[in-house]
Length: 255
Length: 318
Image (cartoon, rainbow over all chains, first blue to last red; front, side, top):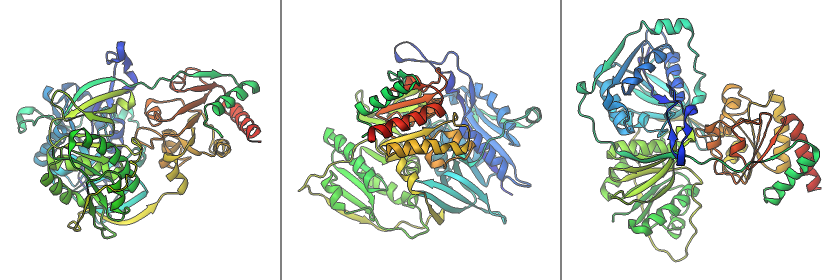
């Protein structure tokens, strides 16, 4: 059965981001997590590994991302590879894909690579397709269902497109990006966490890889998004509801 | 100036990108080239709407997906060397854009809300959302061309100007692709309409059981609108299909009126409706994060409030 690589990213938990002065973002109280979409990738990898296959969890990040390894390993992966280096702390999609591609090519036997549809922080939705290109393998993005053929060697996937679903096939090796609805990720138990601590982790340093290319995307500014509106509150008594509906009418949204 | 290229799979998306492409071309970007599947309408319509050149993708065999055009597109773009390539941020468009960026060894700004000519030597400066929608990220691309994807309905369709002239050429079919389509499933009609609906009634976790969707439907019917949901309703409870899920990674809606029933207002959900003209919320919890993001709010039980709203609308409508 297939050897599967599940890629994940250790990201800021956006629930802890506060709005600072003058529209700045305050990261001082943030916690970190495995990007939500990547939990689906890890779960899907564990699910379709079958008998005899091996799941490798792979990530790139700064040294602090090491905290995510045990979490990833408690979600069904057999082993983890960590491109961990201060130089990898804030890579753009092209750099991340290049680092992951180099590691997969040289260190990890694989048939199937699974990525989340995007990361929970920048949500650029690029690393998966770029990684497939860097490796020169087929890419099937935004899938909601994945089936490994019983005889092995290929997959069938349901890809979400604008007008519905395309059911597609491709032979190994292949990369897919998964939508959150593909599965419900497990919540690791105490036993999973204990076992995860005994699983092997290979850390790869910058020096072991070819020189990192220039970032192709630069962030000029990152400010708090404005979602606030001036909420007018109404009560629940019949006359309040009448005023509420009158307000809708006055704003021209009901005929 | 070597021009602006746009690419989208559907006619309405092409027309939207022509609006943006036209602005950028007028600001000094040179010629505007639209790449369009040949089945998507008359090339003369695109020329009238601002394209100087229309590049048609000849029809593909049933089992080939749009991404099969990738090597051909990469070659065409390399040869033409445009300043920027703008693609509609559909599933297909986003994948093709990211793979093109890899092949052309350039950068891609995904899901852009705005694009404008840059200063300080940047060809273009783009704005996009990050951190689930909590942050606005301004970005520039260091490679060439600048690649960007733009969500559907970010720009209005470009209006036709009679008498415009332009050229049309057709690309021959691409080589076979490693990904084969074996079946296609169309989604239900209602699901296709939610992104374009004028009124959206959205249900969240405050809904106690599946049967109660009826209540939301009655409100939607009274308003002539469509029904949508938050992620837990589709993904965990499966009460509604996934393509009715509103949010950053779901459908992004731009209705005149959005009413959330029992929706708490997680940032990822709010981001999916930031384009709504009027946002209303009904929720028992006065501290629900949807209230600060709403225009009108009712702190109350949706089971008490919704029938009253329906009755009041019917009263008005006579």
